[in-house]
Length: 370
Image 1: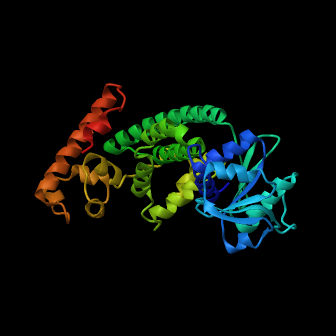
Image 2: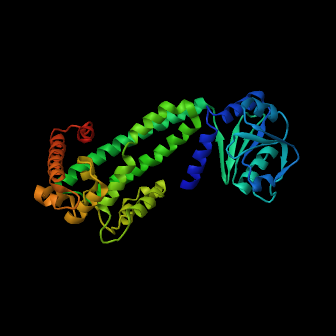
Image 3: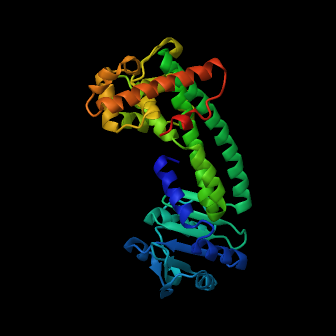
């Protein structure tokens, strides 16, 4: 499933999550063991497939929805699912559309979804299974308790990966301050960051499927993911090969689209950043431009940060610069220059002190957050 399909599925799960009126109506149908076929959409393409039945045209309510589902035909809802338009209708999609289903209801649902690219829900009468179809996507909903169990396992995995990312990022910061960064350090952080973001997508899918029951999980995930995407963007901007003329947005897009197998190839990641290295990445030194460290130590407008990078070219030169040199940068001025100079000095001291005493990095980001 590509990124576009993942986003489409997440939006569908959100619409029928526990706590919504639509999901309550679906649960009524499950409990009543009547089965059902629901199309959420009233486009011209959908209505062309509708035959028979009768027009309802009333506001949606779970009770009305359940009563209408007792009849054999399909139910057509408005695109926003706020109105029940038709009931007891027969749907006639193109029979030449391929389907992997066997039952009549599910075959019709899959074909309608593929032909109209509309959300279609099929509720099995005998198996108590809810299946959603949209475009070429098929997804079977599970019981909330099973989803919650999987979500907790995925959250534990996310916490483990995030801990590893924090460790790698902390080491990268130390090496940047000492000016001993290698391409291996950079690629390792980006690699782990993408793994964390992919894992977060899995957890997010469960959260949407849980609806109101996933509120606590959502809060935990949001806390874990704080600054993860933002930091990865700044690292990309810091280490794009200046001779490659690559754009950070394009590099990020390519990295995000990598499959799990390709993501393990660190040399390929380095190539995306604009470096062609045949040997060990640990032997290839690189210099940070300073986007990430400057942003962490002192909040400055993006244009000012870019002016700093343009003038000094590297983080090392920025760290070595005096207040007078910093103040010459457009948008800085004496006050900002002195503040940045002092903050960078303290930032360096705390990180290096932390390294010498083999302490972890927790709390440092909070100490320097303005």
